[in-house]
Length: 160
Image 1 (cartoon, rainbow, N blue to C red):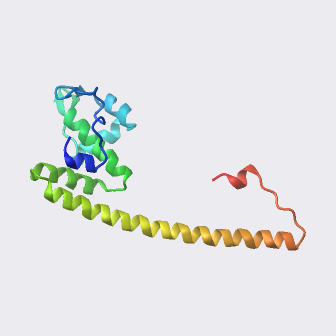
Image 2: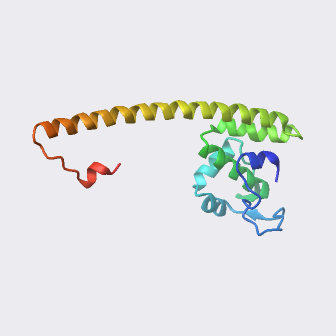
Image 3: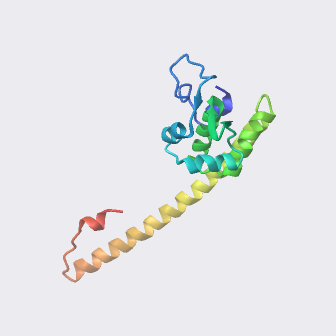
């Protein structure tokens, strides 16, 4: 498994094969990949339309190889990390263009750092909002207490 694949979070056994199996000749139907990755057929076809996957054809049926499966795993990981399809596509394209993946690693580091900064900003926003809501909650509880009103909490009050 390549270093870039490891960086995107794929471990040595994330290929779904038994230890020691190379999987090079293994093929997958769209339904197998959809089930494995929890995707719809339409989503996988969309990734193909976007140029992220290029399955072979057997008549009208798509036949996905080990490389397509590995790329799909990277796509899913990238989406979970919040990367756009355009960023994922560029990452995958750079893999093929540079034998030592120098540019791919630079690109991944750049978008990862940008994503970290975005998430840190969002986290600050969420923390600020939580603080404000806690103040409101305390003020309302104080108001109830001062006016002899009993606070009641229903199941709805505690569920998101």
